[in-house]
Amino acid sequence: MNVLVIGANGQVGRNIVKELAETNHKATAMVRKEEQIDEMKKLGATNVVLADLEKDFSDAYEGVDAVIFAAGSGPKTGADKTLTIDLWGSVKAAQYAQEKGVKRFVQLGSVGSNDPDAGGEAMKPYLVAKRTADDMLKATDLDYTIVRPGALSDEDQSGKIEVSANGFSSLEGRSIPRADVAKVLVDVLDRSNTYHKTFEVLQGEQPVGDQLETL
Amino acid sequence: MNVLVIGANGQVGRNIVKELAETNHKATAMVRKEEQIDEMKKLGATNVVLADLEKDFSDAYEGVDAVIFAAGSGPKTGADKTLTIDLWGSVKAAQYAQEKGVKRFVQLGSVGSNDPDAGGEAMKPYLVAKRTADDMLKATDLDYTIVRPGALSDEDQSGKIEVSANGFSSLEGRSIPRADVAKVLVDVLDRSNTYHKTFEVLQGEQPVGDQLETL
Image (tube, rainbow over all chains, first blue to last red; front, side, top):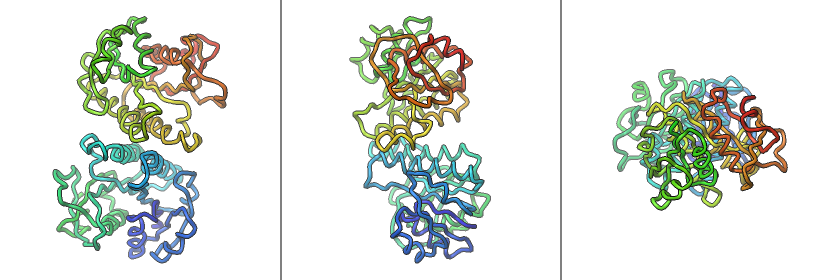
């Protein structure tokens, strides 16, 4: 599949492009700036498209078979960007997918968005945006999978995870390397048992494929 | 009907409470602070419930037949409150309505939310929140009506409006008194022709009832 990676220049996004290069899929990396093109190619992107998530980016869907939405405004910008990037960017991405007939849509979510009210004052706006983006995606007729990782680390890929369809009872002291999150996002692409599923994921004891089989 | 007014202490909210007092409906005004109770009673509220939109406010639905959601964080707070009040408050309000079997739900929206991308950098985050709140409401099985007024003024109620189901081509130089918006929100309550409808409204030349009939 030709996979459009939205948010390819992000920390998880770069790992996704790298991961796709090691599979029989092709990565079409969507980035905003021309100077990011070379690095995307070095990471293994087959195509790079220049587009702005805050504008019309429907042209990026040309020849695309699946979408991985991994864009986020990050912790350095305000809640205004959380609204326009994390939430509205995702809504638009899913809308274009429907218009262009791209059925497969994998979304990078976040633990805690099953209950934004429990997240504390500082996290709540972000969790509301992520949760609503997920709920909007669920209301489409796309073959979606929503992957909600716990705290992200920069450790090397372990290839070992634990998934939970109902949410983990405790996240304390646990995390997951971004490289493992990327592996999960790519690995679910052609697993139809993950269609219309939402699950949390942490680093664990089982190989990625084995855990995804249980969903 | 016993109508729960969420955001009763807001500028439109107060007008809604006053308006309901002049009908055969009863207003249950939901406010956050004890010192707001007396004023709500003076405005004509039959009941006043103390509840915080950012917490669990499901108790406010006791004995309620319909909801008017008119809460907004206002222009003085940041986009974090736009997420937790304007968007999440509405999502929660609709969720409680479903849980409690309160089918009738009237939502105060905003012009411009049909196309948040056209709203300009400053307005876009707000319009994204309002639009998403509307879309989430539409995805429920509630008997909703979404009313999207243009620029609000503090002029006296005129009782004359113009509605548009497809959105006005130009809003320039036009506005609508908050008192007229309140009249519309109350007047649609028992008009079943407005169920599952979204429309824009401005001050106009026709009586409120006549215009609502056209929807």
